Image 1 (cartoon, rainbow, N blue to C red):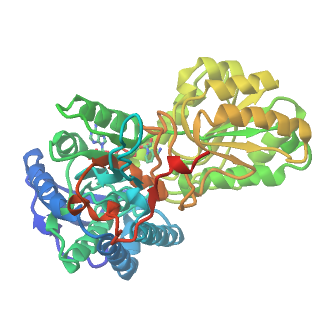
Image 2 (cartoon, helix red, strand yellow):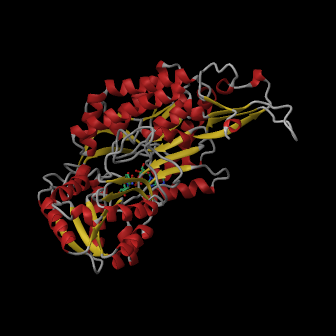
Image 3 (cartoon, rainbow, N blue to C red):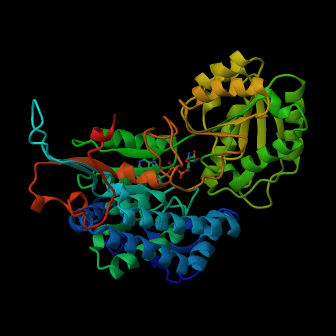
Length: 533
Ligand code: NAP
């Protein structure tokens, strides 16, 4: 630990340190399997209310902040995180076992995401303004003056991810997009990286103070998901939830949110095994590089990436056999990497045992165990199409560097696989784009896979998500709880906004973004339908 030199730390509710009364916890250094750093007090269920109340109070002011001021606030958060970067990275290395290089890149991504949302908010594009001026002489009926824009939903509860302690945690994508939308955030700390979370929470809290915003714009709470987390999902002041984690956690939160007297949207990113389809033309020549690329993608960050390739479709026959023997060779040179927590590691090991015990599943190859605790060897297994499609457990995510190869014998079998898989974050095709037969097949496959995945890619690996304007990191259930949305990129802001239209309001009542004189200079789509032929 670095600047966390005191013995005990607490939740930060609306800028105040609030001692929790439910006990204490410490981080585990997964590389050693030992406790590390100070203790953190955890809130009792009844203590969660203060964070929700403070967020509700802050919403009235925060939602009306001019775009330029909200953009400046987001930029200050980014700058504060950058300034504390060395401390944050050192703490995260101990708490997560992730290497410095990975965390340095992730910190940069976190900062850049915040700056991206600052730019978006400054542009005014997120208001999505549409104007239809009144047409009093229109026949048979006059048209009223109609002005549409998007409004923030209200306080958002965010559950951070274990596998991205920076870019999808305290000030990560969900928090950044919710704050950008004008929603206060209550952040349920991920208990696997409590010190990292606190350092980032301080960076956010200091920005709240520096911009004279109501303190309830941001709270950071330590508490159990099943107690404090659930209490906040139920809290009437909370209007939406962002979540990244397990399918069981995500679906439990969806159920609670749907059972509220006022149900609220839950944007949960849960499980995805990211199928990769290898067509014959991709392995008709030397496929060594393809095999090596596959294992690098599978074993990166110990396979703990939501887009890790956990399923690969390989042609039956000689070329497919050769490819898998190259996969075996690449695996033999790959070592296990420390996983995030002992619990995630044991789930991976148990999941792999269950997979290996299914009749018809065989092991293709395995790497070596890492030198640290909690660093199991990467492994690839193989089965046939019928076994895969009839054994549901073979479609379950094994979070970590485990992949199942399914050997297909015909294009019909391949199409059956594409139809048979669950919703995914990504689907990948490998082919020779000069091979007209495979291009024709790929055309059909893209039409099937686009119905299953949030992102379809060709001749690449799904790990590595480009954060920008056109990216989609989403997909049908169980990849996410709402396949209409993305949690990465500028479009992530849409999850925390809703449409409202103003009809025949006198000009004096128009909110700034829809005003005729457009004081915030936001893009306004005016009389769009009349411009269409
Ligand atoms: P998790 O167990 O689902 O926990 C994520 C967060 O949700 C934690 O803050 C947890 O709080 C909370 N939570 C869990 N169950 C809850 C419930 N029933 N009600 C309310 N809150 C609940 O996930 P994790 O520990 O981060 O990672 C474990 C597994 O998640 C992995 O093995 C993997 O399968 C999956 N995962 C998937 C992705 C992906 O993007 N697809 C990413 C990361 C992880 P507590 O810690 O207090 O329980």
